[in-house]
Amino acid sequence: MTLLTDGDMLFPAEPSIRGVARDLYSSVKNLPIISPHGHTDPRWYAENNLFPDPAQLLIVPDHYVFRMLFSQGIDLESLGVPTLDGSPVQTDGRAIWRIFAENYFLFRGTPSRIWFDYTLQNLFGVEELLSAESADRIYDRIAECLQQDAYRPRALFERFNIEAIATTESALDDLKWHRQIRDSGWSGRVVTAYRPDSVVDPDFEGFAGNLDQLGDITGCDTGLWTGYLDAHRSRRAYFKEFGATSSDHGHPTAETANLSDAAAEELFNRIRNGSEDERERRLFRAQMLTEMAKMSLDDGLVLQIHPGAWRNHSSGTLAKFGRDKGFDIPSRTDYVGALKPLLDAVGLEKDLTVIAFTLDESSYARELAPLAGVYPALKLGPAWWFHDSPEGMRRFREMTTETAGFYNTVGFNDDTRAFPSIPARHDVARRVDCAFLARLVCEHRIREEEAHELATELAYTLAKQAYRL
Image (cartoon, rainbow, N blue to C red; front, side):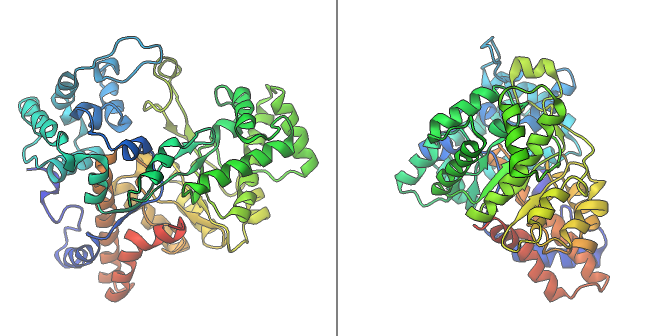
C-alpha cells in the first residue's frame, strides 16, 4: 500500500501528542485549497483538453523527478525532456514510465515519493507500489483514467477543492490563456501573477530586446527611465485585469537599493546601453525591487521575493535544454543588509505586503524572523523549493515562530508546475503544521482551542488574506 494509506503519517510517535494532531488535522483536512503562487500552465484550464499520457503529465514536466534520475546517470533525452534545437528525445510515454518505475527506489525518503504515492493512490486509485514489475499495470490504469472527462483540468481543479490558484507569467506574456478562461464563463478562479525578471534583470537572455518588446507592447518609450517605469505600471495594470494580486521576483540575491531619481536614471541609461559592469547590473536589479515595492503601494500588488538560487548552474544543460531543468542550486543569502534600503523606503507601510522567501535556512532565526517580527510590510513565505518537505516545514516553524509568531507568515503555497501533486503538497503541510501545534498544546504553550484556530489559519486563512484572494 502507498504511504498515505496510514492516517497518522507525519504525526508524532508519542501517543498523547499524536491524538491532538489527529484531532487538529481532522478539522482542516477538507478545507478548500488556496494556491496563491505557482507555475501550472493556464492553457490547461483554458482549453480543458484531456491530459496526454502518464509520462507527459507526471514525469516530463517535473524537475523534482527528472533531476534525481539525471543525478544517477539517466539522460534527460531518455526521459522525454525537450531539447532547444529540436534534436530527438524519447516520445514513447510507456518507455519513459518504465525508466522511472525501474528507478523509483531512488526517491525513498524524499518529499517527491510522498507526493507521488499520494497522487497514485488518491487520484488514480493505485494500491500497489510502483516498480519495474508493476510499471505497465499502473501506466495502463493512469492512461485509462486520463481518457475520462473526470480527469480534464477543470474537473480536477474542482475535485481538488481549489478555491483559487495563481499562475505566473512573464511581463511580456499576452495572457491569452487567461483571457480565454475568463471569457469561457467557467467559475474556477485562475489568476495570473506579474513576473518581470526578463525585463528587470540585465543578465536575463535577450534583455535589450525584451525592453524593446516591452515598449512595443505598452506604447511607452523604454529607452527612457520614466518611460520604462511607466511600461511596468501599464503591464501591472493589465495583469490586474486578469486577477493578478501579486508580483514575483526571482533575483539571485535579496539585495535592494533606493537611489535618487537622478542616480537611478543615470544607472538605467548605462544598463540600457549594455553595461558590462557586474556591479552596475547587480545594482540595477536591487533598485528595481524597491521600484516594484513602491509601485505596489500604488496598485496593491503583493510583492514576492524569491532570492538565493544560482539559476541554471550547469551551463551545458542550459545550452542544450534551456531554463528550469533542475539545475537551480541554493546559495547563501543576506537579508538584514540586503533588504534595508527597501525597508527604509517602504517597510513601515501598513498597507504594503512584501513576502520574502529563502533557500538559506540559516537565515530563518538569525535574519528573517527578526525582520518580519517588527517591520509591518514584511511577511515570511513558507518553506520553499528544496525545503518544501516535512523536515523543512518543521524547521521553518521551529526557527521562526518564537520571533515572528504565526501571523507574520503567510500560510502555505505549493509553488509547483506539477498540477496533480497540489493536493498532496497541501496535505503534507497541514499534517506538519498540526503536528507542530499539537506539540505546543501538549507542552502547555498554547490552549487547544487556540491550536484549532491556528490550524485553520495556517491551512487556509493566512494565504487568502496575505495574497488578497
